Length: 324
Image (cartoon, rainbow, N blue to C red; front, side):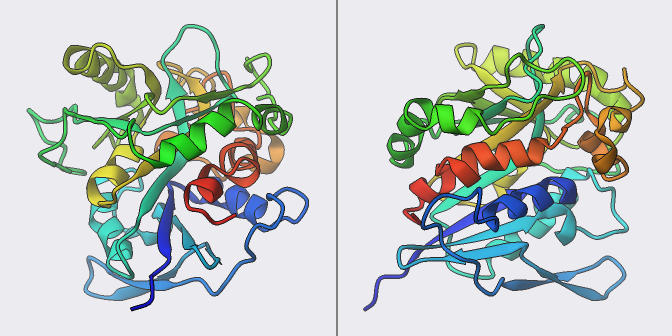
């Protein structure tokens, strides 16, 4: 019986994050040498709340003898009648992609996030493998998003998975200079300079079911207290909404997250909801949910920096999935 190639699923939260990632993957001047060329992207049928169906195509597909990789935008998959920040809706559609092919051997969650530190890490990229999911509405469910799972409130530890030995040492050593030279500083209060922050032990703290951006002001500190109580020795790599939903709803033996730091915890609404801090070419494309979570930052091509660092340039996915 022939050996099936590994299937790598890369889930990107929003369209404005997916576009630059795909741009890097398809740019001969940026992607790694001998990187696979794109192949025909798969499609999946998504049932909608009005009884109709929509067909969604992966943003990109790559194929080699050893692996296939698919890039999916979660926002593309969601029912447009649902809140774009609904964790419940994300959890509904993600398994439909999984069922559309072989069981994935590696899942990568990709998107922007906050960083829990008084110092600005805006423009940095965090790569890790652990996840902790917190539901701030567990006592009083949010009617706009009521995602639940038995593994919420637990540390999902992937720090010893085999992929980490292939991914993290090269990222932290020989590949770091090449990666960091591709980073772009954010327009306001950027880290100086933006850097790559990598450790298999870092935790993606996912705060789910928050559909009103104003509520991050209390929900994020609550999530930090929750993980400190349950896993006090763990280092938080990023705070966001979706990496954990991906981990819980797309079973796979190995998992990585890539977070572009857009702001510090607590700086959501300080600068006009965030879009006013974006460069002109990015304004108007980041106005939903945590897309607007840009404190003194603005992504400023952050999707490009993320892709050029941990995926496009750095073999985070390519190395781990044996694509290169």
